[in-house]
Amino acid sequence: MSDKTTNKVGVVGVGRMGANMARRLADQGFQVTSVYDVRREAAAELAKELKCVAAEKLADVTAKADFILTVVSDDQAMRDIYTAPGDNLLIGATGRTFINFATVSPQVHLDVEAAAHRAGAAAIEACMASSITQARQGTLYLILAGDSAVVEKAGPMLEALSIARRYVGATGRAAQVKALVNMVMNINTAGLAEGLALGDALGIDLNVLREIFSQTGANSRVLETDGADMQNREHDCYFSSAHAAKDSGIAVALAAGTGVKVPLAQATLAQYRLMIEKGLGELDKSGVAELTFKGRGKK
Image (cartoon, rainbow, N blue to C red; front, side, top):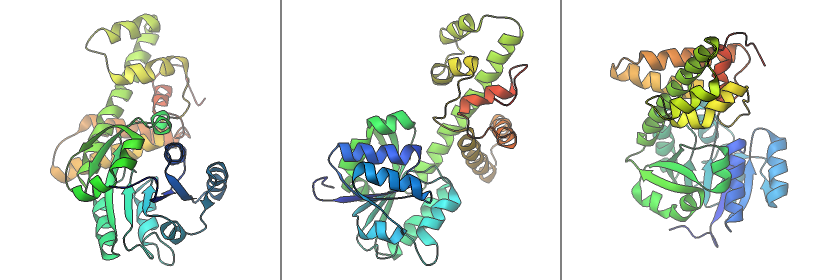
């Protein structure tokens, strides 16, 4: 098991989620030794706050840590931090443990695990089914996969970050499950936006409509988190529409590989890609309502 009093932690990717995870670990007494981000200013600012090093190179993060947490944006970013020539996390990585939190394609996790093993290191998945607030509070829901012994070794750190954890099997499985979670969530979000938009166009009081939704088969977690935001056009970003597009794309690709038809997921993916085209990709996923309500344009 990891010990927060002796083991050192590095964090790669200190955007909305990664920065709050680093803060949470520091609050819980873990030794956050370095942070890294391609946005140097963000890393420097967080390093100053946490009184640690803003690493100039990925290899420097590995050199200063026993556990390295990665929270990057997409498949290519994940591959780059592990395999880019000249500088990557696997330089001098013998004995290190990498915990990968990003939502990326299952094959990427498999490739990273294999590369880590070749470097004498270990890598596991810890896919997050939560958002920014939960990262700061240490109440993430984590979907874990990989070598169970490595997952157990990282136990105290994972516990400090989460309210619940579910181990689902070998590497790649957590990414599959997370893709399905986000596929269904995104479908629900797009569907709610259409229901509220149609209600608005019919002249129905949306406060009343949302209350009725909540007491009927139209109820969902998305109604709770996004319904009022859609109505009031409050789309401060907790989970961006660009990430919704990326994650729906992963799910649609998985479906294509199995031969399963997913027309709702494909339609939802088209909506979120349209948001990106319209320059709305950095709005929260609730911003999909901007495509459905009559009279709305770019905010």
